[in-house]
Image (tube, rainbow, N blue to C red):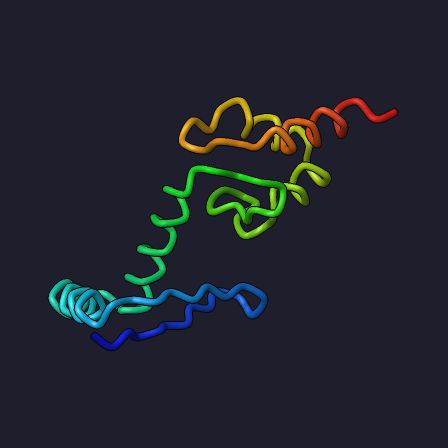
Length: 111
């Protein structure tokens, strides 16, 4: 089956490429028409849900939610260490690599 590629842009510096099977694309298109939802909005919701289900967060992982959505964990930890610590402690559906913990601890206790 042919595959369709849809580009999604929320801001000029953010771009997500999603490759869909032709059947899935047609199903999403049908849902969008039936529910009178813009197809781009429906795809944006689907991508966000996929990102939220990605469980492993590394230093260079872009965060899929919150006030720092789209920023890497490393940048967030350096800019807002308290928020990074809060994420490590409270966000249960994500698993953070040991490097994330080490960076937050280093930011909390600079030498």
